[in-house]
Amino acid sequence: MAATSRDSRPEQHASGPTTGRLMQIGEAAERVGLSIRTIRHYEEAGLIVPSARSEGGFRLYTEPDLDRLAVVKRMKPLGFALDEMRGLLAVLDALDTATGAERAALLDRLGMFHAAATTRVTALRDQLDMAEGFADTLRDKLDHHRGPTG
Image: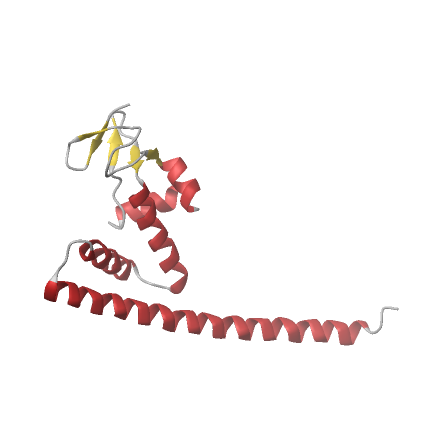
């Protein structure tokens, strides 16, 4: 089955040197661990654009598309906003071809994203510690009020 890419060049369904195998949204969703609805939402938000469409209009995704989805999926639990996700994806895309001062500026931006992610991970660990402490307290209360079960 032939497909039409974003820039209207035909792509092979099986594999090609830059695109690899194309997969429909259901397989992409399963592979990345996101729902079809979530992938469509990310497309509407401008975070991911399918690399191609089938002759029937079905979205077709490549491995690099799945890599982008994985980045977004990993940013979500850290509370990054859609604009921040777009920004990081733009940095990652631009780094592939940037040189000189532009590359240095992109690396600085990437460093800021790294720092933000690290800060958010620390905050989540603190929340988890607090939640585990609360659960332990409740377990202790249960054990105390139930008494010995011997």
